[in-house]
Image 1 (cartoon, helix red, strand yellow):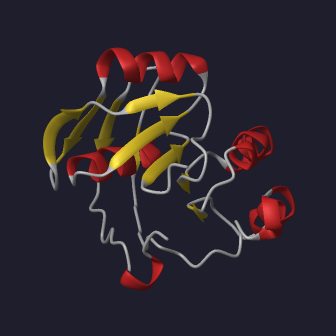
Image 2 (tube, rainbow, N blue to C red):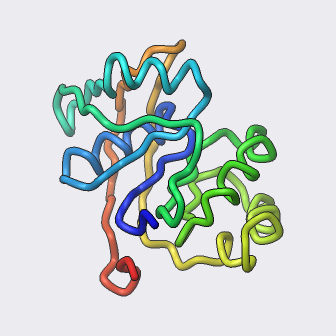
Length: 159
């Protein structure tokens, strides 16, 4: 079991920023993405250019599968959710925190995850990100506005 691992599913602009910040804070992070994205992250790490957080590269593990029992941060585009649901479910995550736009995806998460608990998990991370960009297969992220808050709440600590 990988209960102390954060699996960031969709390590593009938003997910890549979370992976970078969590890694920089000392957490174990696995970026979960498509094979070409995984290859870029393995080769280059995740690079960040940000007025708030500075410039730097974080070397994080990258995989096409969610480690069993990991805490999942879901940061794909909403239209890609159906493709990643089996990948997330196979990892039997301890919790899923979704950063998808809208609310329609919650029911899809509940139905797809073992025990139906993923979509209803209490949010361990609270955030608001106004604008991030990640273009092409590169693993460089430009954070163009402030990330207002990223915190792990005590009541949502790992089991």
